[in-house]
Length: 109
Image (cartoon, rainbow, N blue to C red; front, side, top):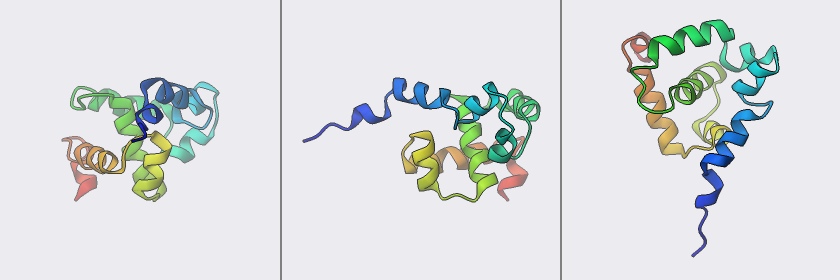
């Protein structure tokens, strides 16, 4: 049996997060596409992240990026899964959990 576990390693995620095509890369490079990607400025994103950080268990920034990207882009969960290198069921779970947070529950209704 072939082991594909290496595809979604922490190192590959860190490399991907540093790429110019990720929200972090766009923010780091001063790329104005950050707004198009998440439909908010980096300042508003960090304000929202600060509000939700304690409620999001692990990797709060990535969870918020996945949720906002899904809501802002209209992309399917498969595309988001490839973009963030997270399994499709996990993407669905993250979006659902994040939208149910106290500060975002009105979006989910």
